[in-house]
Image 1: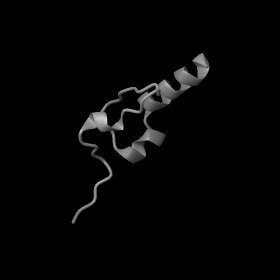
Image 2: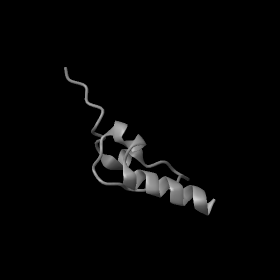
Image 3: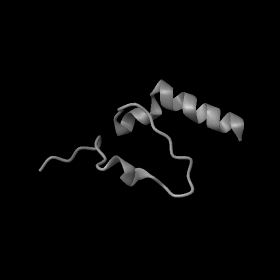
Image 4: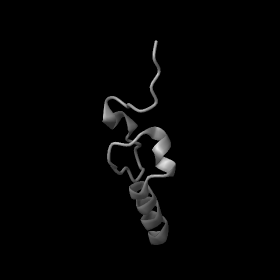
Length: 49
């Protein structure tokens, strides 16, 4: 058995009711900490709060 932490299927299973659900490019789970696009989205969200 191979366990992979890079695929969520179906993708809409991650939608959280009441949250600000956004989409990003195809990146691995661990890349959320270092991806520039994610960083920009987080900074924009915090700045608008």
